[in-house]
Length: 215
Image 1 (cartoon, one colour):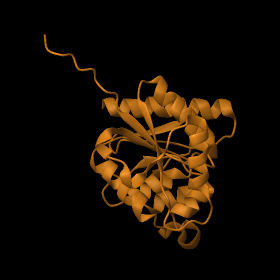
Image 2 (cartoon, one colour; image 1 turned 180 degrees about the vertical axis):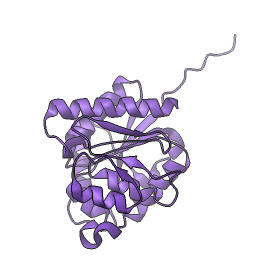
Image 3 (cartoon, rainbow, N blue to C red; image 1 turned 135 degrees about the vertical axis):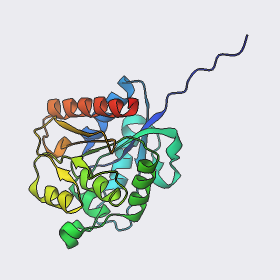
Image 4 (cartoon, rainbow, N blue to C red; image 1 turned 135 degrees about the horizontal axis):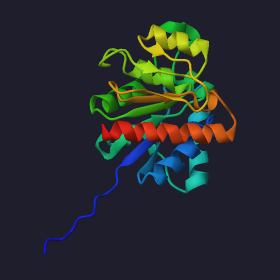
């Protein structure tokens, strides 16, 4: 009889952030509940204003005992989807929004990674401050103008709109799904620090990501 090969579950990658630990913890929890492997992805920004990413790596190691993977070493073919988490310091490290406002650009390494994921047709999710990074990352290659949310943050909404996206105002736990661009976005911890709401938000995010994976 031919040997039966067990299908190896693919991974959902999560870009680390030390400022939004509950987004990451609850997202990892949901990833495992749905039968996927999790990959923590670390990115060292070109300009390091704060210490967001190193702290995020230490946080992840303490929680899991596993080593985060550097973004440059991630094989996009091993991923089923990508989720981005970011706090305000992460956002400032990975963009020049504070200096250039709505004309902001983002870290070149992050931009290249996001574009590689998008071109493979993989779903992407983002919480809060990571949403404008995601929108800027696919600017110029998006199939249509992205439809996203950062919850209810006028400053970030203005930056998203300037990048050619539609910003939807949402309440905590609400996730916006853009089927055309395969995006799922929410306010995450930016919208609420109540753990019950952050947990529900991450549950809704993973449900949306899985819906996009299934097509």
